[in-house]
Image 1 (cartoon, one colour):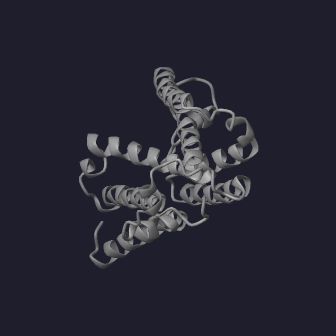
Image 2 (cartoon, one colour; image 1 turned 60 degrees about the vertical axis):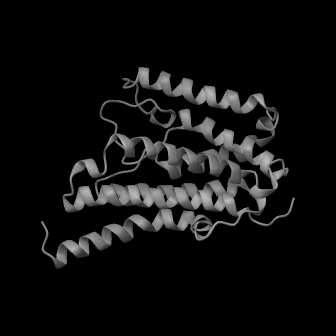
Length: 235
């Protein structure tokens, strides 16, 4: 198929990024400006957070089918993730294994093992990935918390574990792999023609700069909030 970007994928990624920025804005308003806690933590937002985070992970898996080097791409994301960990440690809101850490790890892993996953190209694969996602989520929920240290990378955490953003390998790795399966269909032009020709307004531009937006949105928003606190003498 043509190497031209698929605008609908960028648009979906852009929507996820915008909703993520809104979610973090509500957190900042609660944390730094004293807004009511329900603005950030409520049943609706808690559910939607994982829905759109899951879509973002799925789209990252799709994009892995179009990447020239998933290993190089993953290393770049992991370096950014380590910077996030350092900065959040300094401001006492540490991110140990957030979505960037997770995605970078998955990209590198997939880069080394793509031929293995390519064997699972049939229509049973997505069903298996969905079942494994649900099953591992249920199992981890039943097991946590645990007394064994340093297993947070796979989804097992101790009572005193904290990460301001946390996306362990399980169950999310199966969502990423589902994306790589879907990406193969997309790359092979197996979807309807409208999927490749649709051109939504604005959202694709945001989606194409998702990585930069992710890195910069929190420093910018927190900086603006701190400036507002200073100007209006808000304690």
